[in-house]
Image (cartoon, helix red, strand yellow):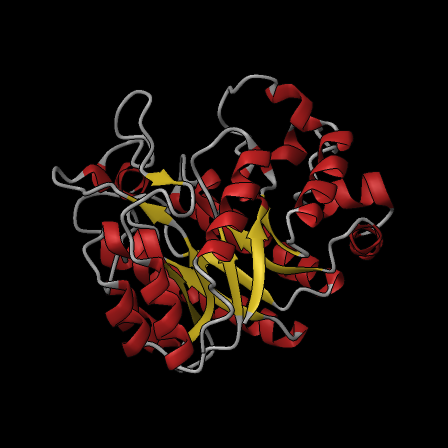
Length: 315
């Protein structure tokens, strides 16, 4: 398995202390060195076109920013190698940004930037793109009338089929991430994957599965032939009052986050890793700590978890 760290751990949406420095290239230059020093040489990049609209080219999360700061996506990939990062192993595109208005605007923008993310993957040498399968439930309800969920899923299916064709053309594997707040939460993703006849894989995300009431071990065993990428995330949150339907499902209460850093939640992540090995999974495992605003601490916490649990030493 290929070990990977998600730079999604740098949360640019929250007004944390010194947030503005994260919009400058020097922050990301240092981050690469910190990741390398922490033993991580493969990264996941969240593809976030919203930064293009604000002109923040210092945030290396789009093709435009790579072109502005480095000349091209390929040049950015070369720069990463020179600074301790061997490869971009996964790209996550979440089109929920565009779920705020007409449904057709959402699908048009999602398809356009989904193709852009796949092209970015090809040029950077990345072979895996994972797509958030639907926006949060509350956003879908705001865009659609009662009873239109099936039609929304049908249009989602058609969009994904087109993106899967683009991915195949580019030599990229397209995976579906089903956050616990989507229309296809938990085990519902399985039947939806059947529609693509193997052209699309599953992004197995441990915390999102658990919060939705699914057993990550059971899903791993059942879907072992369709897992395209794994996200190791952690949580202690139990959704007892349908938080997944709320407007801010990742932040159910003030000063509370659904996700923890790796090893600080209640999930048995050791058992998941063992099940993946048992299933013969040999792809990318993305560690995505999603709690601390201190990226240095998140990197070291994750490395400590991997080392202390002897993750890669077990057979």
